[in-house]
Amino acid sequence: MMPKSILPLVLLLSLVVKADAAPAAQPQRESGGSSAAAPGEQLYRQHCAQCHDGPIPGAPQRIVFSMLGPDNVLQALTEGVMKMQADALSSVEKKLLAEHLGESELSAGKSEPLWFCSADPASETRERGEGAVPRWGATPGNTRFIDAPTAQLEKDQVSRLKLKWSFVYPNATRARSQPTVHNGAVYVGSQDGTVYALDLYTGCVRWTYRAEAEVRSSVVIGAGDGKGEGRLFFGDFRGNVYSISAKDGALQWKMSLEDHPDLTITGSPSLHDKLLYVPMSSREWATAANPGYSCCTFRGGVAAINVEDGSRVWTTYTIDKPVRTGEFNANGQARWAPSGVPVWNSPTIDVKRNRLYVGTGENYSSPATKTSDAVIAMDLTTGEIQWIYQATSGDAWNLACNLDGGTNCPKEDGPDFDIGASPILLQLANGKELVLAGQKSGVVFALDPEKNGELLWRRKIGAGGFLGGVHWGMAGYGDTLYAPIADKPMGKHSGGERNPGLFSLDANTGEINWYSRTHNRCGPDAHPACDPSLSAAITAIPGVVFAGGLDGYLRAFDSRDGSILWEYATDREFETGYGARGYGGSIESDGPLVVEGHVLINSGYSFGGQIPGNVLLAFTVEGK
Image 1: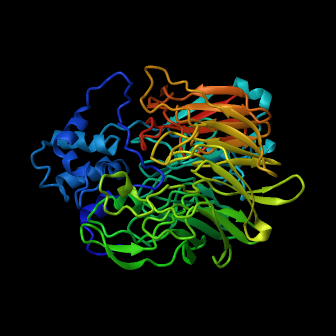
Image 2 (image 1 turned 90 degrees about the vertical axis):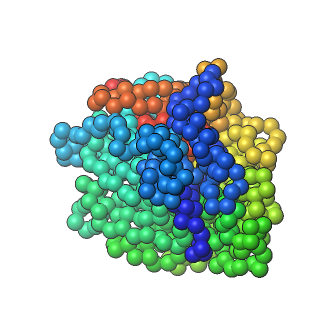
Image 3 (image 1 turned 45 degrees about the vertical axis):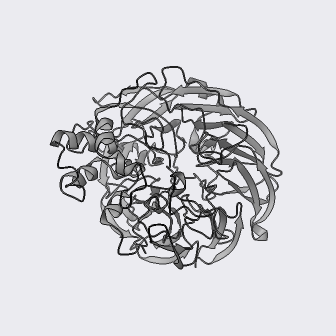
């Protein structure tokens, strides 16, 4: 656990997650032609930057504020730990500063309206709701392949896709919770913590539930509680896990993982046989930028939760418990190790071998361990680690390494090559099964689950880097692995030729079938963050691979040769039929969903220097 002596300000303002590590984008939708700073930015530079842009003990780096949100920033300025420092600001200036740093409007400000269904759509659509995609990876093996009966969309229909409806998330500048679908309902989380049940066919709201914090991952659909009422499971940014009714959103239980003050849930939980497997990630990688922080004490892992009552059955950590090393940083703070190795992907279920597989991130302090940047196999029943394959050794890194004189930077200093995408358990045409994984280094590889993770092949397809290589999710079907590559130039470990786009590989050998480069479509008036990289997870259906880009384009690739069948620019304004207006932006983190002829995609990602937005879009051949 974090030492008790840590400043309350750090505990309050260090709410940030591992996967988002670049300077935050401005909430305004700026073009590349304006150099004038927004009023909130001017206030920040005048009153805040001297502490929060530099290595000042007790002052969190600016990167944390957008995850904190404007309401918490305003509370700190008016009543909390920053009240004295903010006394010179007027109430209007405090609100401007809070909304600027929090990257959205205060909850007391203007909020987009919601369109609630006029009748009970569940009773009207239950008979026609045939398709179901109840989890992040579409299948227990996280293949991200949706079969033809579920997708109900043929390859020759894709070119005729049109926008059917759009949903605007209120109080949001990013949309990253991948929807799940069952019985004609779309379940999705949001930045302000609201979980929505939307009607698949119209986009109207059936019900809402408000969690304590942002719901970043997918909602998982359960099989029911014996009374015919299904359940939904999800985690929030503060490490809470919830079970609510799929019918009306009523809370059934809530529990907190409570392992560490910086613990968060980024990856989607996985459900199997009455156990919910929850990945444990952390924001301590950013907290460590504070030179007054005693680094580092978080350890990643997986917690197995009983779905009946929310009790914890077991927890398996990716490292041993951190202890004092006997060393101190330049500010006299004790160093701790081992630390880090977060899990920020959805666990992959292997029923045949009674195992789950996860990918891990880097260590936060020295020395690096054998479990960082690795694929780890655990027993489904007990959590016991069965085997470990480490893709990159010696990787210890935290945000202090990006700052001049960062006192908490580990001696290894990177390269921060997490395995952020869920491993894929894929059955080949010959019946053999492989565990396939991709890494931020730009490397993809295959392991043999029958031989304790023995390496079968390894292929480098991207330059890699801080926001490079394979980031959020690949797809697999038959003998083919589809891998998106980001390769956005960022960080000192980025190098080599950039390969933004989509690769098709022979899953048996790792040989490249084809590569489709996503060319830069960003014009002179585009947002400064416009980039053709494919960082978000992808999704495959028979004959087609759907992929969203940081430039806001949603593209459909022909799975035979990588040619583009259809594309749609989501980086624009959307007007709904119920009075709400929203924007699309970068497509990041979550991937497309295809069910009952509908293609669903979130658009907008304000954090990480990308294009903000707040819409969920639904496309069909018929359109509106």
